[in-house]
Amino acid sequence: RDWPVLEPLVSEQCLDAMQATMEDMARNAQRVDLAGDESDFQMISCRLSRAQILQSDSETPAGSCLLHVSYEVQERYTILDCHSEQPLPPFDGSAREQKSTWVFSGVVTPPTGEEASGKGEGEDGGGGGGARDEVEHGWRLHSVV
Image (spheres, rainbow, N blue to C red):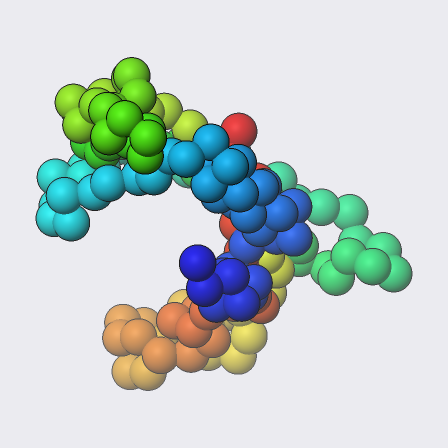
């Protein structure tokens, strides 16, 4: 539970919800057991379902947006009752499909210079480099719906 590490990655509301969930599970003597391998979570699909450009103002920089990403994941983990050591249905280690939409917030900046003209590091316009290959303006998880 290294909460400070998550602070730059998730909104304050998401972090609060995560902490409240962990506190609730501790109060109810529950714990999550993972196999610790690739079988715990397997991505079935992931797609950008919506992009929202926000109106800029004194608190919202130009280019601010929300990206809605729909995930379909096969999960396989166990939530145990620590008193009985019995799994809590439906979290008994059986595979189950989970669908959710994660909303990410950040700022997208327009391309500049050679990037705007379609030219990359070489004259052919290919190649990487430039601001587009870098992480843009602190993208973070805004909410899960």
